[in-house]
Amino acid sequence: MVAYGYAGLFSRYAADDYCTAGQLASRGLLGMQVSFYQGWSGRVTFTLAAGLVESVGISLVPALSALVVAVWTGVLTWSIAPAAAALRWPRPLPTSLLLALMLVTVTLGTTADLGQSLFWQTGMLTYLLPLVALAGYAGVIQRQVARTDSGPTGPGAIAASVLLAFDAGGSSETYVAMQTGTLGLAVALCLVFGRGRRRLLVCLLAGLVASAAALVVVAVAPGDTVRESGHPTPDLRFALTSGAVEVRDFVRGFWRFSPVPALLAAVLPGVIGLVAPGAGSMVGVRRHDSRRAARALAVVVCGTLVALALCFVPSYYALSSPAPGRARVIPQFVLVAATATAGTSSAGTCATVCARRTERRRWSLVPPSPRRSWESSLYSWSRPRSPRSPMPGSTPPNGTASTPRSGRRGRGG
Image (tube, rainbow, N blue to C red; front, side, top):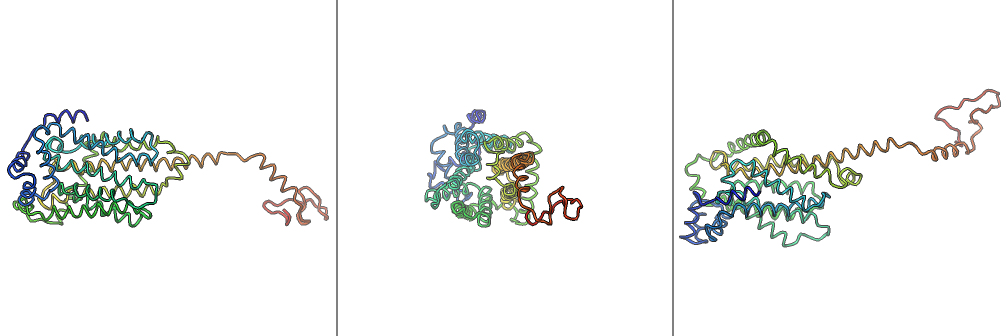
């Protein structure tokens, strides 16, 4: 993290940074928004963020990388803390900070073009800044889910969901497609399986409506026709098939060319979950169900594949080409976060199964109590027996010794 901040000190204006600065100087902040929306792109959040940053001056550019990384880490820590407390992780706040640092470091260390995603002002405000808003939106949802009261969703949480989802969606086509599709899938799953999750459903619906509005604003911008004028006619079938192939290559490349960061993202949350208090006790067995954990793992895997495909489809549809390297920081973070979530779910499943087997083995090795055996024998021999079932070893009236039958007793036995 310190290395990223130090390298950012050498950042300067490059390429499109001069264009946005010139538009701000000649047209002002509002005129800049109108000019870019009509003549270049519908990324309203990016143009607003670029105008605000350039209003401060060029002196902010060297410190911008360190500032965004620090804010991103802090928001991720705030977002993970409720889940860490609910899972009874040791020291939830430091543990959340550790996981936030891991997510940021692995994402930036494995992304395709770190220079344009972090150290270039235009690329960072377009593709990295929405990930900060995504972390804040996830934190709002986590806190609503973790509430113990039965009250409705507060207006502040709904307003924050709408604002964060719209601002993040208005940054780029890559992010808004992924966010809208993923929120739609989450709302559908919540309606089917999330009974009693009213606050979660309200936050998801608010974010979905805001993300859909941002998608419309970005898609109908007049400036999009200018950018698409030199490219082939959009083909949805080609975009879907190419996006699916891109997902396969992207996931395989992550595990093939970055095995150590990938293992770190999967193992670290799992180890933290296994060493948590009660992870292997009967309390953990009662609270966790292995089938539910396996179902959650399957949902995470399928949802991740859908989200990754939605990240790649817009570029193939609009430009008939793969997404640029700077845009791949968005699917990279999605993949890293999903790997960490899958590691946590797998660790919970393993802890549940091991705890159940240990408990069964412990009960199977417990010998019967001698007192209970003696009392059972005394009770069975003290009860009066029927004349048809004489006592063992006694002589019946016909003079033949009786042999007790196993498993059968007299009427009184």
